[in-house]
Length: 375
Image (cartoon, rainbow, N blue to C red):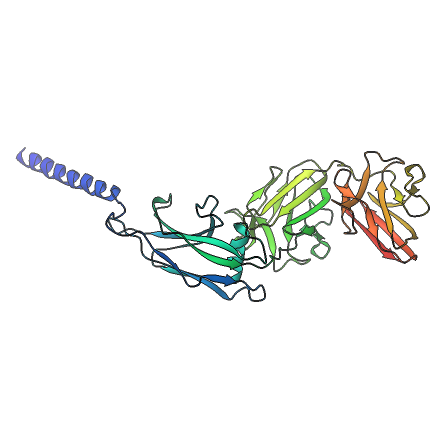
């Protein structure tokens, strides 16, 4: 009986010390007597040269943050176009042993684009270092805010090529469809098939660049799209799946570093296998009279062609009826000769500088493209 009481006493002592130890661990605090982490920059101004994207551009130094007990500390270097950091851009995240970081010209240029600094114009970029502990970023501490004058160069955004069973071209990489690129956006109106897989390539080949959803289940080298529309999901480790209804969709990629999104929205003209397509404009004597529009020859599902002479000021559109009705296609988004097709509400006239010679005009509604070839 006496031994039993002794065991209970020692057990109570052990439990008391365990509770005290746990409480000590929970009371990690920032040392109040220490100055906050101080950041310093290697330069006051940086001119970024796009010809040497991997050259060192700026080094950021900081002092160690102090907490009341030894603990693993993480650091984040942030950039902003405003001193209050309402929308910070993360330049990099570093572990406890790191007290400085050197950023290349392309990293600084991406940061400049991420905070909204225009290309080829010198602007002020604000920088600070933030420390924290734990995966939930507890007990954060911030450095002083300092600034550097940055002259960024114009970003060159990647080309995107659509390929896969869901697409018009199937899995033929050499025929992968390039999207129409304007600055950071790449767009095409093209065919997508329900519940089929696809991906984007960076070239008309399987390597080296592939683009898929930025997800833990996909191949690390292919993770790109941070946001996708609800009709696009992860299919497997390298592909995406289209889950919308089969038809023509406007595919939009925003390659801005802070966005990297992919959306597929139904076209105002979801069908592609139109019975007849007509050519209207200042060609073939039509003189923009829809009633007299010239019938093109159908060569496939959604594919039509017509050969005619084209003057230097050639201008035309494609109609699905002999009127300016709902079935109307032209150059995507605005007047021009991009070779990409846009439906009514998102197109302009096809404007082409001919030489009075003969040209074959081909329109492919399913693929979302047109071509003008000298004969």
